[in-house]
Length: 566
View 1 (cartoon, rainbow, N blue to C red):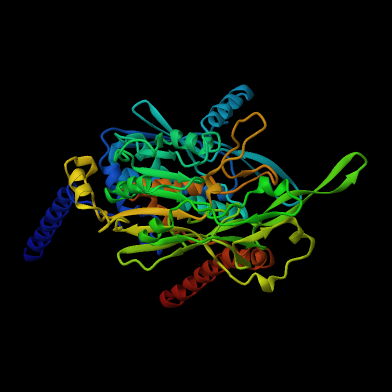
View 2: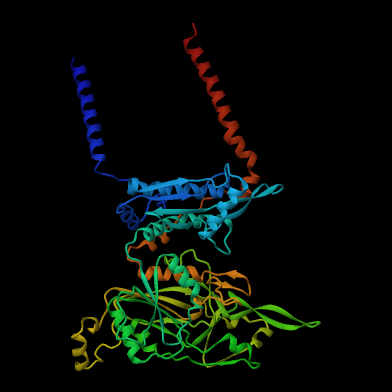
């Protein structure tokens, strides 16, 4: 009887614990990610955003159907991420995987492809099969997010030059959270970020900025143009100010407006050409171009904030864009060849900051180095740098095509990893602190929008030693090439990604860009060892288990008969 009572008591206690655990699970929620790189975890900023959704965001993912193993891993990574988002967002995260070609006629497939292309989404042609027999398969690594009648396209596959396909797929998996979080943010934000391009000081014109402005519009930014030579101040309604390659010196009045915009919390991207180097002028001169400093009168202001754009020219013999030069004639037609032009360096990401993580090289033209200045309270982060075979030539200097007649000596290019773009973060001191008269301060204090502030709240700015990084090329009809596309080599560099990431980092307060810091290790089999040891591992995994089971059965029967034999 005692044993029976104890069993009933234990049963009741067990049932009570299970009921209590079930009740608590309705209010307390947690998940455990046991992977070393936290593969199945999402960033706190993403959790906060999906938890705050007011209605359902629906994702249609077209990465379905028959595809190579690498894309299947990308599909599974996408599914894992969406399940993780739904774990925190509940019914407000809905998704559906669609095979865009299964059961479709040729016309229907073509219509789907055209629809995706119209949204800016591109399929991928991948080679499948063995080395002796292969075929080309079209895969659709893309998705579309929907919310309240609006939609946002998501390209799942990264476009990275110089990486093998497995590394590209791995980097694509790393970027998934950033892409999906960005889509949710863009669809649900109540106020689009406002960005202004300055005019009035010979900055790049609208045609030269057409592609980046169009991309910002597509990403639901409000893009404006502001002549800072007019008016009394720069409106704080603008989340960021972009000063793109000014050529006319700034007077103190305009510098003061920019300074006070920053002191009131404004963010600025400075794209400054420190020299007069110009490729069009170089092409029409037989003796080359004599390059001197281009004084736009911003040195003291940038110095105060913690950076200095040097009056030099970067040369890089390892990573640079080519230029076409005439080398002779064949009949009546000129012979054109491409030569590496050391003054057009391809800039590399400097570290793992979210702005430049896993990014392709960025094209530049006649770039200058950017130094950081000792400035307590301001954090400096190098974003772009040259390769290990570079140097900086101080101006005045003569630039000419004659340097291409001889092979460069690497010993003279001994200034590796020269910084060209720098991020500044912290509290900035005003350039005009302790420089204003009491009468001027009294006038400013009487108007709230003009009140003088001598230091900023926590803010950030980006200083780039080349204005052409944001300039797109123009076709003969005046239309814009995509930003980063170089018509000579017909290659597209990462200029657009870099500029867009810079702007998002400046205006975004949610921390979504930090998701680009996520790491996922690629654990691939050694293909050579797989081929060489194929038979061995087949025997170990197939034959050996069967042999062990047979031996165990024989042994078990033998000892059983021996034990129970009469």
